[in-house]
Picture 1 (spheres, rainbow, N blue to C red):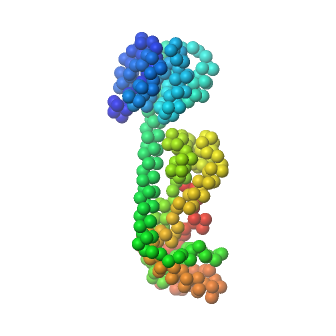
Picture 2: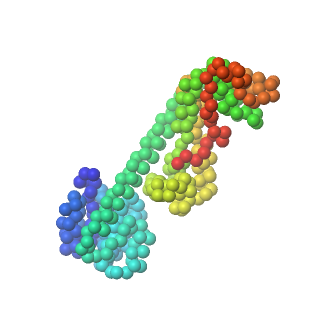
Picture 3: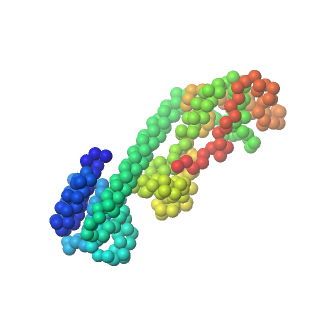
Length: 321
């Protein structure tokens, strides 16, 4: 972590306190900038780019709890560590309720609790930064994938797919094996298509962010909650009050529609053209209808051909977090 990342804004009306903290934290490679007028916090944050703030509660110009609320409304990602000289637990609970990361008592003779709070705050901010960068990267990948799929579909000019008219009992995995037995597709290309399909399933958090159901700050809160509890994204978001159960179901439906299909994945990797896939699908349906069986072709025939046993899930898409 470089010095710019370890810069802290200390808001306290008492210069004696700020200078003492500044000198002591400098011994631990922190750079502390002082602000003695709490009403000027907004300009200081904007100009200084601080991500961690030390904030006194008892100040005559503006109460620290009010400043805390204003900072969190301005940027929830700023970590705020509160200080109070009053041994009142209600102040501690109130500060934590307004979003403070920690609340410490003055005077700070023992610096260890403050160092621990700072280290934890900077670590959490780095995790949020990485989560935001990952979400942004996933959005770019999704947009690029959508562009590529649109171009492929336009260039292939596909005929209407039979996939929407498949009879009950149809198993896509059996049709895959039929394609291999007929020599229409190689096992290697089929595996490549399956990988393309798996990558197309968008994380529900990415969809929630893109559809403005949740903010970047909210997304980071949910991801942190997931890391702490191992809950699914939807469960964590509902528990935090950022999404309702109905909204999660709506996002899961969007996830199904935004993801590609197994046949589209085959087109995307160039394994088959839409026209050829539809032709083989029509032949397969006729053969299976005439034999009154939806089973894979006979084991005797399959012995002479490599067969892929993995299948696309029958329900196509589940929640991916």
